[in-house]
Image (cartoon, rainbow, N blue to C red):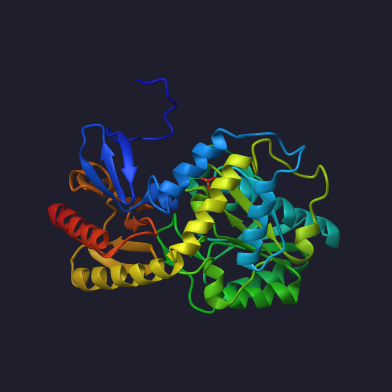
Length: 390
Ligand SMILES: *Cc1c(COP(=O)(O)O)cnc(C)c1O
């Protein structure tokens, strides 16, 4: 029994410190972090510039509320919108909150168009968060169990299927306000959209006057080898959500918008007490500096390609492995049999942090600073792990 609620099942191990791609537990044992707190610590643990930014800002000002201008917030908005080719930003504290803001924009867009019972198109096997609206937008019976009634106004189609979307347009066209999609579905096992898919979505959304809303919470900020995954296809969405890597562990989320969507919120229509505070925004600006100066998009593309190729050749013909797929430093190894236990003590005994998505896909999301040596260690320890469990 503990005084904690029972919603997590933490492993009996506690990390004390981290450096780059490595972690050490309370007994001093070293681990390779191939998960980065689920795509969060993208510039690595204890990056000296992040440490300095936090220390310095803590001695200046942590919080003053959005009743006053926050210069770091304005700076961060400018940086992000420049990088994304978009117009304006709203800041909050998590991915789910960023998607809540996006879904509110979709409703305001519907209201502006005079739609009475608006719908947002979402994808099968999607994950958008755990708040009521984002849970309702997600496709996970386990996460939704027991929470009925959910928020209404979502219709789902298979991910990657343009024809299915066109069919929904035929059926509900007038009621649809937006399409919400992850460029790569992370939580459901690193499902990469077929090439040309996002571009096709952009065209349909333009033709129908729907908002294209990309959930780049996991794929954004260099993870797939570009600043944002939509950029691989030259797609600029109307709305984009970010979180995970943005603060490298300091909680922050962002909802970017462009075109008419950027002007939908008016004074008082949305807000957050902590959102956009000086500490989080300064750290996020520092994360962007590091990503730019250390060329982390290029490094993620390069290391991701090598990691994927090595794993593909090493695992070809492995009896337990059904598929190896990836995009930049998002890599999934799908197994024939469910093996949720793989991510547990066995992996830690091999000195490796990994995750298993939907029970059967090993998911690797190492820091984007990954170098040749650490990449080799991931492969070595992962192969030993797969060997040990047969
Ligand atoms: C993690 C994640 C979220 C939810 O983010 P939280 O910060 O946990 O609320 C939403 N969408 C995607 C694609 C994610 O990977």
